[in-house]
Length: 395
Image 1: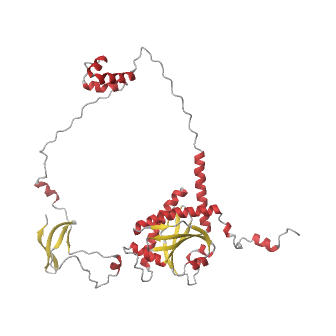
Image 2 (image 1 turned 120 degrees about the vertical axis):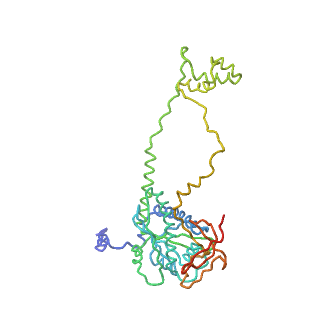
Image 3 (image 1 turned 180 degrees about the vertical axis):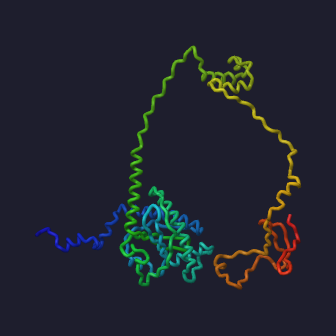
């Protein structure tokens, strides 16, 4: 029969587990949703770049994102060397996770800058120290990005501490062991990362398709709520006509008219103005009260009274007051010397390592009381204990 479906087509339609045909996944996200995902990623990574700049004290530029669909084989082809997968899970506001992919050498440069280096110490293998440092950097970066998303989506969004793993894409890896959504087609957002003249590379964010649609839905809902709130605002009330001035009653005084008249008369001659107003015998305090009295308010205004300054204020306390704190214990510290070391040098400490201090042999050592430098002295041995002999009191 013409137009009838075959049994195979009916089975394919009823079997929901049948994977979609090639190219069908492209229709999962519309062009508007792709644009929304790109805008969310652009704002989030822009905030993250600012945070990374504060951590590294280097100029950080992250380009406009490119949104596309990808599979695990695409990621393996894009990154030839081992790379770092950083998993960020959303715990509040959104239900899902995404993966940030960084190249191994980029992670070494970033962690070296975080530890006070110049970004050139990239020799050696990537270890737990590098992974911990990049996890902390991503925690702060994606935390600030989550704050930006909270403002955009109009709800609180929070993340769990990121987890960093070194993945060798040249080896056969079960992608589901990293994250289940990598076994299917997912959303890939690519950025170009530039850090000074040290890094000019590409980083990627990988999203499950369902998580991307959830973010798009949240953005659409927020925009609709804002639109509804704008249209629901009541129209401004029409302005009322200004009241017409009423005719003055001859039997009533016009208090407001007395102020300009008084001011005009007093500008010419104060005494004349006061006599013309019938106030020639009023004192200055009474004249100060007159504006309030004319409006029916009586305010008692008086000049301020101040204590005279004298020079007989006691300078210090009597010697008897020191007895109150005689039993207060203070911590006395003897400092042999100091030095500064980088994190790398401290991690290389082993039993037997000699640390050179900034003090010459035989030079007096410092005595501190509660952290305050008070005296100098020399080391002595009392039976089997060390002691210090005070040689100078610092004034």
